[in-house]
Length: 286
Image (cartoon, rainbow, N blue to C red; front, side, top):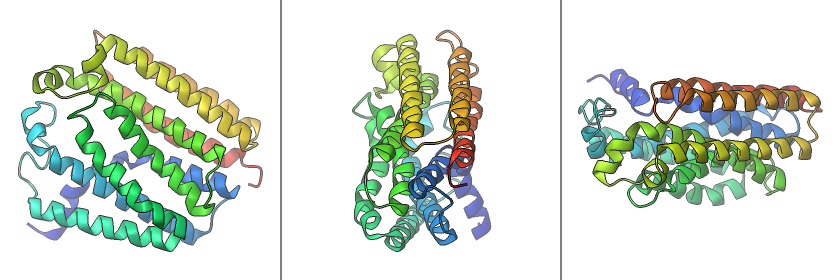
């Protein structure tokens, strides 16, 4: 198989298009930390760090889940269950991605580099959580929250309430939509003894918990805007984001999961992009 074909399959394996969920929030962290547009060098390093970390995490996830994925009707056609890429290639992708991640964090600043091993452990460990805890969704949210937190620390190497609230908002946002998506695997997870909030509490209660998580998300983002002294444009846009999340929950019913994919991909893609745009428009120095 040609190298270009392997790269194409790798991008398909890691769902490269899903980068839209976290990358805008990573930039939000960086833009809020500076109060304006960061230098191009910093932006490129942040993209490299985020992309390499996500590639390592997703490749590792597909690697450790390949046997589970081969049993699940929803995932049995993924790249590794079908044997379309060798395990040796995937190990190589993970190794190169980790190396690039450490290089990027080293070039950003000392604090980000020192914290990078902890971040790597979190994003890789997520792949095992559904084997022993129903809080797996929160763990995924925690992994996602490292994007905006890392973006902030790359520009301003200090923890503040603003960056912690931004990270918390992303954590509950990611956990909330992951709960919705995991409802599709309810029967399979029950059969295989895997853990999730739908398995632990039932689909109806899981959707209610997801709604609560997204309410927490909006509250966190509201106070991010207040602490950052963003203009009214931000809060008007945030109201729109709240409406999108509300519509997402109206779309998915305990007895009808046929629209989960629309809710998961389309609506949450809009959320991340809109949040990025309204932050840019609302920054006082832009």
